[in-house]
Image 1 (tube, helix red, strand yellow):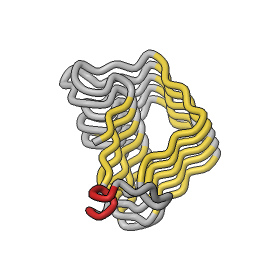
Image 2 (cartoon, rainbow, N blue to C red):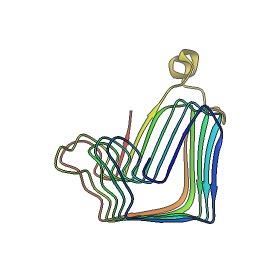
Image 3 (spheres, rainbow, N blue to C red):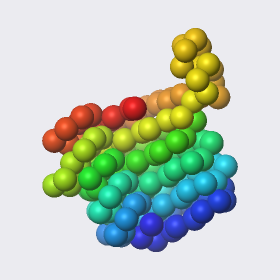
Length: 157
C-alpha cells in the first residue's frame, strides 16, 4: 500500500484522507492482508493507483471487509479500479460514493469493485442466505466506472 500496509492484523481506518498515493504492487493507498477485519469509515481516497490490483484499497485473506461513509474518486488499477478483495467471506459497503474509477491499460475486471469471496462450500451448494457470508451493499453510488473486460462497475467472482 502506498500509505498503509498491514499483514496479520485487524486494520481500522477512520476519518482519513488519502490523495495521489501509488503502489508498485497492490493497494494504491491501503493494502491489508491476513487480518481478522478491515474497516474504513468516514474517509476519502482521491487519484490513487496501483500497478496490480486495488487502485485505492486491496484487502486479502480477512474475515470481513466493512466500508461506511467513504468517497473514492479517480483511482486506477488493472484489477479493481478502486477496490480489490481476495478471499474475504463478508463484504459490507454502506453509504459510500465511487466516481471516475477505472481499470488501467491492462484491464481485467471490476472497473470500480473487484470482489473475490471465499465461502464454505456448504453455503455455495445449499445457496443459504447467511449474514456471516456474502456481499451486502446499502446506499452506494457508482458513476463513470469503466473496464475493458468484465464488470464495468462491479465484478463479483
